[in-house]
Image (tube, rainbow, N blue to C red; front, top):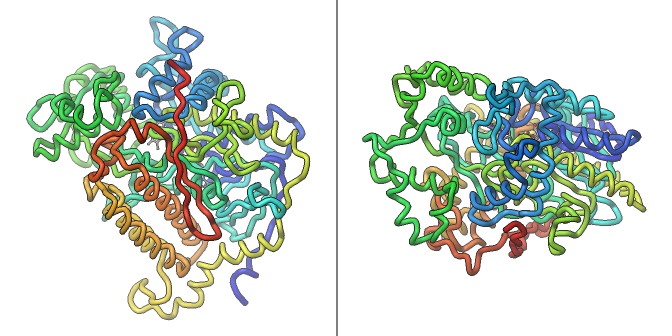
Length: 613
Ligand SMILES: Cc1cc2nc3c(=O)[nH]c(=O)nc-3n(C[C@H](O)[C@H](O)[C@H](O)COP(=O)(O)OP(=O)(O)OC[C@H]3O[C@@H](n4cnc5c(N)ncnc54)[C@H](O)[C@@H]3O)c2cc1C
């Protein structure tokens, strides 16, 4: 008897299925209920929504708040800001749509019990920077999750979604999703009329700086395993800007965030000799990217570029000057609380390395690249825009619907909308949910999930356990078997390929056509070997499927990077064979579509419309 028959199959029917209960997923769940009391709303989460996603540990700031009630910023200002930071290329319609609604989301968070700091002088929210407000946010995620729990018909925790189901009568229409319970091994078939993918970003696709004893530590959440991209890619949805990976300047070894330090504590950076170094690199940069370097604020990638060049010139390490700010007891408290509320690991690293920022300026480093759609980057699915604001070419259906019928997305899943962060992701979940409810109201024919497809997927999903069961006796040494590879082996191989060929830390973020071509060949070989992956238990089965998703997303990254023959974001990555920014040919979005039958990819350009002056 194979392992397949040992796993119970459980069918769940819903109107709206939300995949991933992080910030966007909680927003989508909450809002679906707001628009229809009778809908069956199901949210599926591979962890437990109480503490899942990138906000699991808490946050110390909400990074996207306009402050329209006090006339602090207008939505158009945020579009200008994101556009500038992404070197001109953002979906302004989508960004505007989030910005005009995000304040109401934040007000809800406060109503639900999130403590937001107030400026004692003005009574307004305490600003960390122009867009950020400060919170006591250790319990941010449980507070948001409670709203989703109350709204959902049912939350299914501990279920990893592996595939979307397609309509038996329409190959370009979604009909639900399948996955397995990571604790019981039950196989779940979720049939749904509309699906909203909210499965977070992608870490661990490039080799991280933290290896050996620090393995597993990353800046973005280690459990962000690229499902947000792989699920729509497999369903044939168009993806955009997958080359637009992000590299973060962070405190060394703990990836501690720097936002509160720069913005609120007014700390600054200097090289090993106590010198300001950023501006010395900007003249040369002007030769390759033109006047973008003179924009204010300086785009995030360009500040990284100066950091990297200064380090290459041998004047590292780059340090954050904390000694001055930390003499002020208030700032010292804020500096530590900032970590305790969101990245405790950095405080522990400093303690273990005898770093007291009051007396020692801590080192910074640049991270390995990540793929995501909600931070200072905008990779993700190509989505239809709001009907009152999007240009005709960006509208083919309902707001936030991908190019697959009935398939919506929000947060890290959706491309083109950088700088939405936690509050913007929740807001985008709300926007997608409202549109999905409209989609349901207009729906004429119900999608049909075929039992045959579900049975076939069940076999595929548990195949790694079958492999392990059959071949475990062939182990030759330790965990090495000639007949399977384990998820950790596959992950390390993926990270090495991406690092060396697609522009990771080991290659100084640099790549070129021959490297990318070879990287794609090696990824293809890895994909072939994934058919032989072995999973010892359900935990390893989850790792196996996370790896599958990471590999597919990585392939998209490599293909997009190959397609865009320019260096648009120096500091995020460099195409050494095309070192210049090329606004003539590349002031456009890159789109891809994967054909699951042939394994081929179609690439195309899409225009960037500047809607805001
Ligand atoms: C270190 C760090 C610091 C940050 N700092 C700030 C900050 O200060 N302020 C701010 O506003 N924002 C900050 N952010 C950004 C913010 O956390 C993200 O923008 C936001 O969480 C993105 O929302 P999301 O719903 O797309 O993804 P997530 O919140 O990560 O949610 C994705 C969810 O999907 C689940 N999932 C994934 N795959 C599957 C699958 N296959 N099946 C089922 N479930 C799945 C995950 O478990 C997770 O719960 C920070 C993020 C990080 C990592």
